[in-house]
Length: 208
Image (cartoon, rainbow, N blue to C red; front, side, top):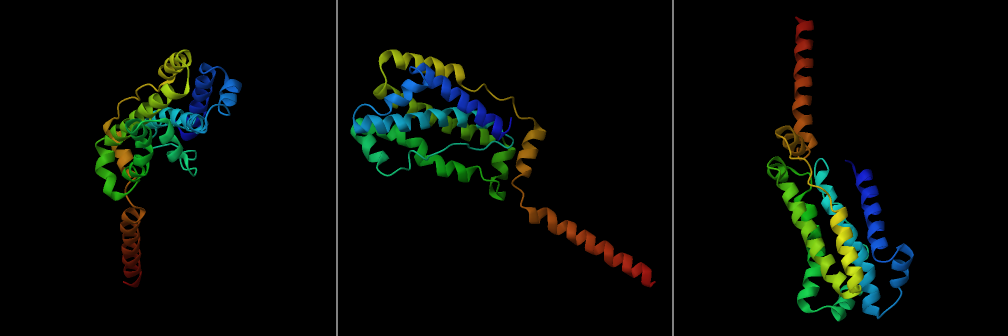
């Protein structure tokens, strides 16, 4: 599975969630109704639902990495407006995945410091935890933004579209994922030295 396949799968699943909420047109129409806090909540809800699906799917990438967006969340005044709709604890749950998103990106960068994480297969565990935070965030907003019937349909659609567990990583998979963390110069410098050494030996042979 590659990034394009994951994006197509995630968008298809998001469309199914919108249909579960009453149709794509209805879901779009509902985003313009209600209080300002509810309208903001609906914008963010679909982003969070999309992220929950995409982060779960991204566990199957080689090497695993986080695919998520924070466009809606980063719009001015989003967090403050949500605070009018949610309690302090609920606001914390909704904000949690966004607060940790940058940290997870750094944990999964292809740097030499993360070779152990890649080799031990802990990158999938890290991504699974982030996906869980987005699912918790989605569940909180769902209760405040949709009717009981819509909540039921959305919950069923989310479970139906949730990504299956990727196949277990083999030893070779973990080695290949860890190899992405090796800087180019670590491979390039020894090879250049070998080429230089062989060239010098060839010149010496010609002179003799």
